[in-house]
Length: 632
Ligand code: PRX
Image 1 (spheres, rainbow, N blue to C red):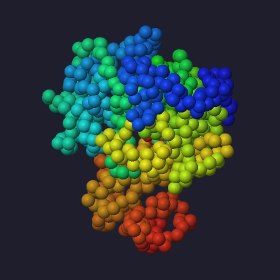
Image 2: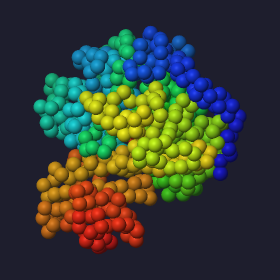
Image 3: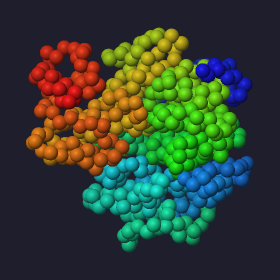
Image 4: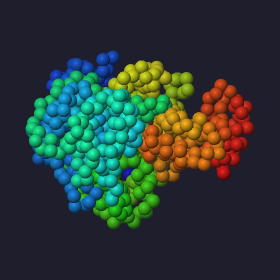
């Protein structure tokens, strides 16, 4: 079991933390103005809080400058980025000077290809240095990056390219995963050919990860490496308003269409810097390893903007946790003396299965802070990570947040907030969570309810791309005056928060957020299927797994399950493929025609004893039919 507080080793004491919380409470405007000073502004903002015009609204700055140029005076020769290839002997170390130079070169290449402030640039890359460089190069020019997860299908990529109106794409010939090659360029080619009329992509720049050739379309595609070699190594920064978008990142909600969450520049970067320093106890000499892909918000905030704005050293690992043999991650921690290790409960569950002897072969004593994000962690996984990896010496931060929040909102602070295994504990200073009942009434004391955030915080998303109204109706309208998170939570007698999971139809598979409606829409496009419902059920390894109930046009068709799986893989991606597809004669519906998901979930989980009142169903007999099918 972890030692409470573990005082002494960390930047903040419980008293320091209390002073921050009190200051944020007493005068939020002064508190946030002060936090805004962690950035270098071109024009310092005269106000901090969002009073309708956004955070730090009259300030101007450049995010790339804040992550690079401003460090050149004091830490040009410090390592900014360590890239560790799958092969142990293949390591690239970039100092802040090197990284700045690479970013300038790429920014110049982008400018030569017509990219200007406000343009959207899609980034679709494996874990290579160019991912980080691309983001900061866009930021330098004021172009808006749209990073696309490597696991998206061509359809999913095309949807996001169309919605964002991206005019340039940065991709790779291939990604490497063991002996396998992931076909990045040909996946992008398929995406670009799907519905060319709705896309604005004029240029595709291709990073050579290996020397494997890929088809190139003359006039549209260029290999990036030779262009970088001949580009100038200096590039002026664009002056951006605090509220100008820095990036779009697509995430799933309860509609089928992915939402392009828009993050601004000044507020977001302040939040990235504030939370990275506070939650990860950032200190000089730290080696920070966040295992998230840069295609997700965790990678944006804690691989790139948080640690680099704070002048930290970031590790990027190309490989997998247990390839070529179990223990590869522990080997990386040992080799690079990682101090701060941030990963997902899904990864921990998988690594636990390899047993305790594997990590014990490695020296993990460099670790000081362990963190998790993305899904609830069980007490068992928490304790294993804390004991076997952290040796009971480390601070453990179970961080709760989401794409829309820009950075962490609820988390322990090392040395200052006493942990409880599997609780995200307390809000960061300046964050005001509340629990409300179904009608939106705030609940007091130890209780359970819907998690909302009272007021705002600098990292909150600006809007949804092309859809301000949807932002309002999704987050601000359900509980007026509060931001609606989509999560449920319990608060205990110490005021600690325990996240209970989504209260909407979002499924969390291995930390990947997938909307039920996305899967149902994919199946609606498959002719053989008339109607479907996708449900999340508990899964030992993935946290949640997906189960689909589908009504077939012709139930005697022999390949219905395969067709369903194919439709989902094609429209969404393989990461959304269900554990099980049940072909059923009908779905349980209320008399007004609404699917009763609660019932379908219980049946899929085998909890058939307490199904409750079935009299409101249009056809109560369907329940027995579904049970028989599921129990096979
Ligand atoms: O349900 C919560 C869960 O992940 C959702 C956000 O997903 P996404 O936008 O993809 O961002 C993931 C990385 C920040 C949340 O609404 N979630 C995130 N962190 C936790 C969590 N659930 C429980 N505990 C957490 N620490």
